[in-house]
Length: 464
Image 1 (tube, one colour):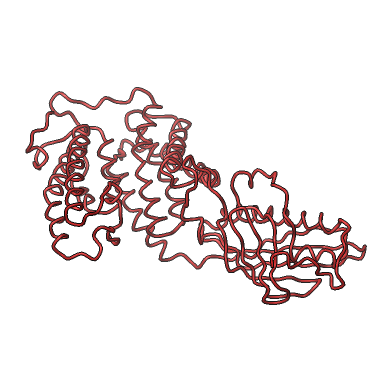
Image 2: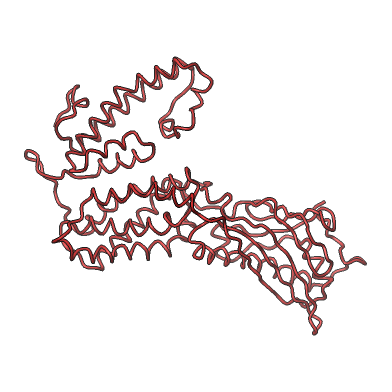
């Protein structure tokens, strides 16, 4: 179907996904060119495609501190494009057999991009003239097509992490289950599939979703690997539920609009969950080693220790932050201890100085818990700041009857990731390995012969 100059402004008829994409691309190009010209002429500033992705609550830099007239001009300039875009969307919805009310999403930030993606991928719902949508030729092709249709959850991740600043049950539990269920449902619309194939399609959607997160620099490989043990079983469960639904085809035939309706429930559900989440939980991790040295020798290396050799553990080599050295400025309560990690330094004001038995400190600054691996180099997902934080730590030194010393390190920390019980498995394990790295190094240093001062604290001012 060829598009004439009036076609984008018509509300009647149908529009194929190909022509919807081409018309939208042309309109976007023309609007962008006019916006760039207007911004440069009125404000003497530049304009890019990324400017359209800024939240409505953020005024773009070129438009700050300006009079109302330029805003009105830009608003009037956008009206014909809004009319054309909405008209094209209505015709595409009609062609795809979707509810026309979905056209309202054209005016909703973030969600409108999911609607565009869906309409570009959705086939024609019925025969119009001589055109018919060709069914996928294989279950793999069907699965890939279904996977593309559930790519909209990318927008939900952006909404949850960037707007709500939340990593909750909806993101880590409900979304993988729904993705597996929706992918399997759409893959089985044209013919029945075995449970194994439906589970395979469900897991394929998770793989594609992870690849998209990696390609869009929204997450790193390490965090995706950490989320995989919970995402794949939940997606598989969704695939198994979809397999059971196949038996209800005579009474209920799954349709894409119904699945899309479920997807549209996620944003308000995520917002409600964010409002109802309890305060971040506080956890503690204790690790102990036995040192073949007296408490006085152990104390000196607890307060400050030299540089630890490069790690061999895979978790640290994969990007998780690891301790390198520690120094202290001053002595006694109020002294500032700095424990340098691979991503920065923990600032630890001393609270209890009971030599040579107990060193307790608070934590006033936390570096990033890891360095994400990404093909784009350094990236900064939201969960690297404020979602996993140490709150307090201590070293307890206890003499043993055999002349050796029991050294115990404890860290109190909080994290704001849900379900907390799952993510605690990772955080506890990582902190325990951090403890082992420090305690083993202290043991090695304390067991080596060394001269000490009369008070057993020589060398503790190595950071002053």
